[in-house]
Length: 254
Ligand code: MN
View 1 (cartoon, rainbow, N blue to C red):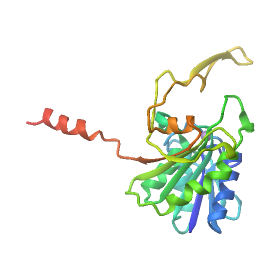
View 2 (view 1 turned 45 degrees about the vertical axis):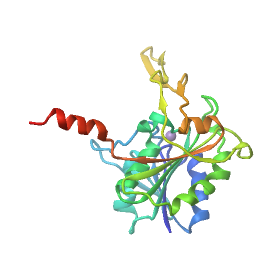
View 3 (view 1 turned 180 degrees about the vertical axis):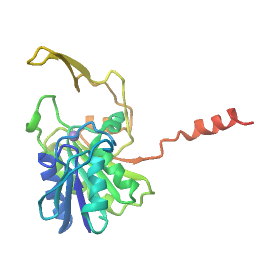
View 4 (view 1 turned 45 degrees about the horizontal axis):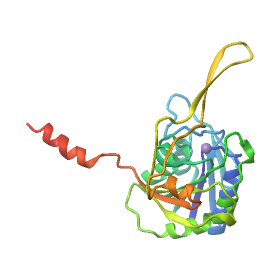
């Protein structure tokens, strides 16, 4: 099995190293192609207004001066001579739960894989409080990732579908288990805008992540994490709302 490992936190992120270790437990044929710098919040963006550069860091190990989507595209079209059987994206430093996944570069790398017809899994380690920087512990992800990934390797999934895994912010020994969960919803009071002044006296604004309001609906990824379970959510790329489509068709009937 050939595995492509990528992320949105960048080629030097500690979570990528954890995921590489996990990938090597599954296969000897592991490739890494990840953004050169952190791209959290990049979503599914593709770099179109400037060139991207590819750097090789070792055997089968590359970085791209662009987004997670750029990295997967470069891996599939330029770096790898044959398509991978599996794409693993992460392990992200921080949650990718509920509506937030639309901002996620980690999930978007897996989306790009799903679009290419490759089984793709996004993995994220939730952390307890803001401002932890490089101190975010990956213990739960490190110990549990294989148990979460292995059942997904042969699970039947339709085209344009991918998996999103989140690990709760606790020690591996405290994790209660793994739960299949649907995508939850955040109340839209999400985050904060921090205002400050730079060293030259100019105002800046910086988006923060504190004060996120959760709606812990039953059966959601948010609820699973809150109850100290790992969440596994199948995601689909068809954003069409089919019931509304039928109603619209009536409305536009001539
Ligand atoms: Mn990230």
